[in-house]
Image 1 (cartoon, rainbow, N blue to C red):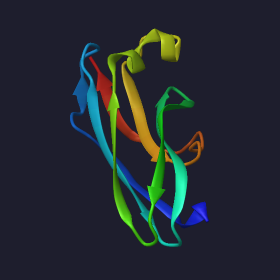
Image 2: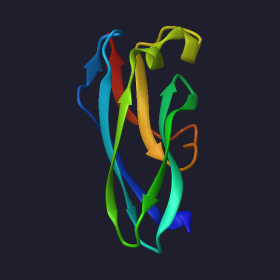
Image 3: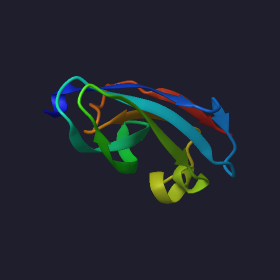
Image 4: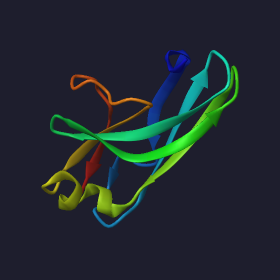
Amino acid sequence: MMDMLSYMDVIPSKESVSRTESLNILSGVANDSEETTVSISLWGKADKEWKALITQETYVAAHEHKHLYYTLTPEMYSEKVWGEDVEEIELRVSDRMPDEDTRGVMVFIL
């Protein structure tokens, strides 16, 4: 069932953000099959490690295209999350962890 879901790239409200600002993210999911409820995550990668930053349980009707909205708070760029201060994060949306070599949309942390 979940193989019938496809995701559009994330669209950040800015390409760069200061460490004290939140960042709004738009993405979407298209369902080419029957209705489903699925956990969809905004994934972030700094260096080689993908992490689920925000997960939302989402109902997607049959053959629906639905927008997804996320807000990254300054804490999500922090050493607490990544083990170090990061200068850039790649972002993707999916119901499963992306492969290590999967590319995301880059956001720069100033």
